[in-house]
Image (cartoon, rainbow, N blue to C red):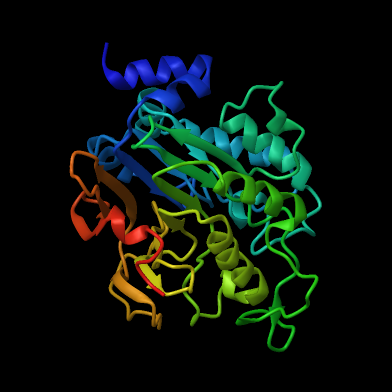
Length: 344
């Protein structure tokens, strides 16, 4: 029986068993998929042969308070044959962003967030008796692989608890920093949970944030809209000594890799892939991002992270593939770079 068939069988019975014992070396991810538009990119996602795929936000464009409408949109997405084939082949995990949460740029004030969470969990086949059904927010974590080759996937919820955004003139974008000391992105319970996850042992940690963590210059949604929360994020990494972190983000309708020295002891990388079918189709100038180290400013795309565990110093490849399956970005990174002491 093929490894992926074994993985799927185990996933359907007990997540813990296959998560703890199976080495994974190819993780795909993507964001921003309009359910009523063609999605040819799934052919190339399947051809890339991932061991795991992460849907990291705007998985549908729900934009509704009507949960029947939300369910129909998820069903439309789920009925795409090539995506259905992916779900038959590998585990698919996810979190949400604003449109699949229910409202553009929404935070804790969205009135249907409890109901929307249940529809989201239905789509991801979460059992009715799972503790995730009682939890507020869709944050979730899994660890894959044996000691020495452990990949931790931490899926944050940047919507359910997030305080209101602040604009320069209260009329909309561009957003500016919300300096209210009470303002939050993750909320008290999720921050506590996140710290617990970072204290678990793992060699590589993929921390999924639907919005960008590193980029500072644009006026759209990003962690820098809540500067004290972003600083808390970096301080928590330093406090817990959680090595091996790479952030995954979406939302922007283009792809890029950003990197900064956040004073945690090693460089912080933010790997953005967006969108699966919502990216600009024609060339356009790059928006300013003084942390960008690689970029792709148009074309639909998905991200792929490969790990060569056979090297004495395992090599990560942060790849972006376009709708034709062509490789557009390939940033190679020794895992040793993501260890404390690389930067001061």
